[in-house]
Length: 333
Image (cartoon, rainbow, N blue to C red; front, side, top):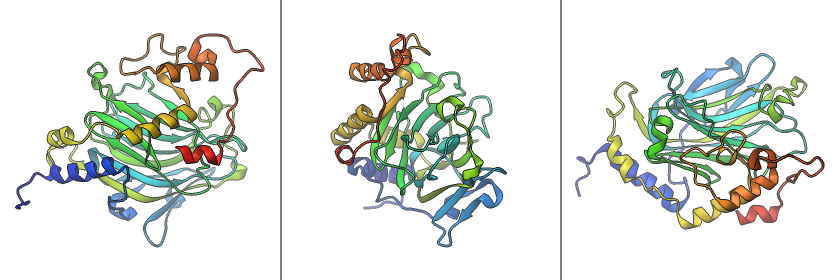
């Protein structure tokens, strides 16, 4: 069979199909840091290990740090293993995300994983979010606790971005699916983006709305990144279809989560989701058009926070606290 005349997007389709069918990213190549990324800021607060496959980012009173992909991408599968700073990290934000804000200042797109700091003894919180075409006034945040301590060891965080949907994964378990709808219009990310990783001081908002701030007596705060996967369509932002056939590859990529993956995702969301913009009645009297409302999710979140999700009054002394999840629960994810 002759392969030389096949479009370049064909091979991206095949490999992405294999990822989704298997539920694993192990078949994808892991690249050294300097083959895919470059330092963004932070001077010597970014340290590359001798093997070139692992990077330390740190935050101190002087500065945070970060790196950015050398290319821009339009769709693909992007992943990294991350180990977060231990102990007290209130106000510290670690982010792994896609953005094009440096190119499209007034109408940028964004796909975010954000870790929002930790008060000792409390569950870590992870946030996902998307913006399209500068629609920052419409927050599409979801927040979750996790079934493990993300500062104990490395865990994989991945983003699948296609023309029709975005899926967030933790250790190959899908935790959120955002399907593109006609009513979203340009609010769905649709322009080429770079990959970023940063650590910075988010004292004003990150932990309990800014109630707990960064305490630099615990600095430096160090987060580690490894297992870099940049498996997407690298493009020229001026001519985004110049390096591969975007339309063809986007249409051919599977758009559904497998039945087993969906069971795992539903289990995760039932146990660990603590906030979803779709159910926030304080912000949206009518849920945004792309929201698919689950009565089970609505009732659980209303019990968890009746003011935000039910429009009622909070009764003091009756808050439902979430304890750190047991090992048995972790196995069932």
